[in-house]
Image 1 (tube, rainbow, N blue to C red):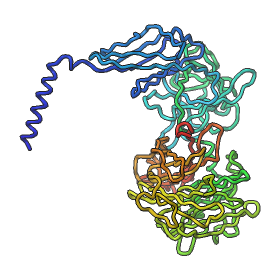
Image 2: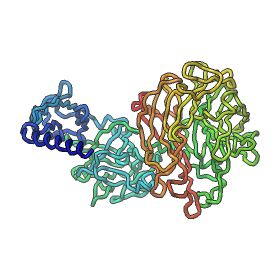
Image 3: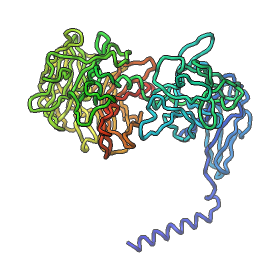
Image 4: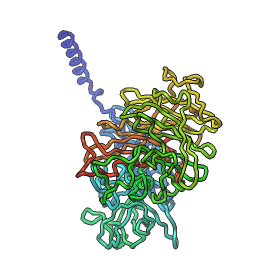
Length: 618
């Protein structure tokens, strides 16, 4: 063995020495464009894609496209044609091809595209907001203590980084026009909250973020300044402008000649962001509201415009102490509940009451799905409305072990009162091998498709299966075995329609079955990503999972637990963005959720995000 190693080392040494004697082999092969800027008219930094040798440069509307003067840097000892500083004319097609020749003689073609951008025409887009000295506008606070999600968190400047974080990215959202002046809202992608000014703010006050409150304090005028790519940003409520002062972002009297008041808007791609409006919907802090903290939020749209929200283990508002928290020696109030949202656009939690039922569990009037004998939980999943009734899958068990699953029929009586009736469809019930809690959707073909899963890899993965029943007969289920619909569920090889990580949920939108998948979030792992895959058929195949978001919820400096993925296609917002939710749990890796004798309900509530349709192929 030693002889073999010595021989190999000798060969490598000989090859290296021989290579060193070849001057041509030492010539650099670098043929990159490393920097591209225009002398005038450019907005933000150029966007590079080194895999495709393409560069996108955003320029102001009105820039003379027949006389652009780029300043270009390339790999060491490489040359470029046309040369840096040479004026180019791209008025015809807004593109220019460059050839970069390495010292070795190898050449690479680069395509530079120039996109004309008129800030005044913006309706809805993502930007980085950069000060004149090159720093990024961002939300302040300690990420590891979830401070960047909070109302009234201050806004500061941060150093630019290659992989710009969400707290440095902003939606510019057109709001209204008055007297030929356009007003915009500016929303942070990390928090979902809006750029705002403190109450009674004066010159010198720092700015902050706050949830949407409909006031002039969250409206801004964005004015372009000449052809240098800068703007001023002025608050409608008080007429003061954003400025940099001693390193802080403050409000001052407008003076467009002051460089400290100059900001550049760098267009960025669409991206998944925090939906603060949906998240705030679950911040139910009124003791009289019923369910105020819970670990699931699936939704069922009704034909009358209302939406049912189904929870699992839930705390009742009566458990609140004076600090709007729960004592650690208390336990949740019921194993499930249902809330009735008056319509999909009403996100005021005060308007969404709990469902009640004459069939409720003894001592738990707001628990709609009763615990069965010899069990201690009933956890409902997904459901659909058929006619006047709503059918919902429900898992049942004791401790951490599932013992059965059932199908419930919910029927409205009057007001918020509904009847609940439990059934055990053959094949679906009296087995726990496949848990049909992943999704339940109408396929538009007269059938309802119910998706289930089976844990693999110790729960870090799930195989996904599908069953169906006719809308006319919800108690007669058939099950896909990989080639046909049969009378009994099977997890045999080939029967699964997809595989995913530890948390999955399936819904239907725009003619596609959409699966939201999340990494296993209940153990101490550093993967915290969310993915989307789609299929045109309920039996698949699903596209490869596409990464869309990383969960940034922390508890006392550690990753908080997360789970119960859910997709909500009925909650359209007019922006072609899909609402997704997940829940967090009190504890984190190695940390008890109890702090100073109390549980904070923030860590037992649903969180919402929005993903643009364009990202996931919808």
